[in-house]
Image (cartoon, rainbow, N blue to C red; front, top):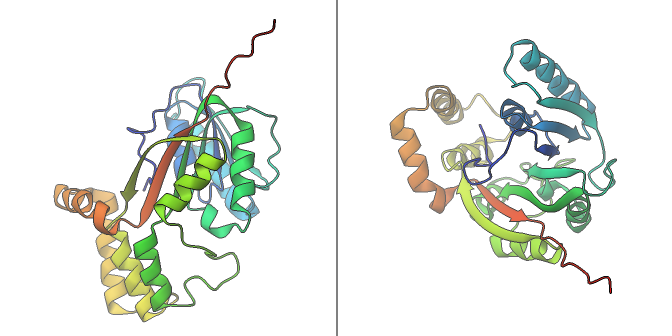
Length: 244
């Protein structure tokens, strides 16, 4: 289940991509399939080891085109182990709401992104997320949990302040908002509640089968209750300096 829309965020074979805070690797895997040179980075060593196994399995199965590369590594988003301008593309999905120093993370992403490069940022959307917080303290008051809720204009302003130029945005995963509301209402760790189990089955069916009815419904509902806010931006080229 991808949050970044690659029809709005084009990726070319050979692009150097950093999936920052990659988690289970869903966006990194898609970039690898599209022929990119991918680095998936996360501070969670267990998840990184799983991502590395999947990269190896994809290579063995021939899922990535010739020239594509994939590396999984542990790292700190506030001190990226890469030189300046190392990447053509940076993706950070559902990560910034966890990090106290979000401006520091943005600064590091800008540093490692080449001029003209593209960045995709996704965070939980303000409205649906506020409902979750209102229904359950346990939803966010956990170690490593969500420490803030972004309004779209707030995130966009921070991206501009970091030196990036936003060029588009949208909302995603409307069908997932009611699921999390149910989880928060019945207990975030209570997967046995009948409404939670029933809705989870619906989501799994939707992800696996991609029926037209739910695809149309989600597209219609995304502007209203989309779970994620997705922002796309570029790093401007610096103006040329006359050497005279």
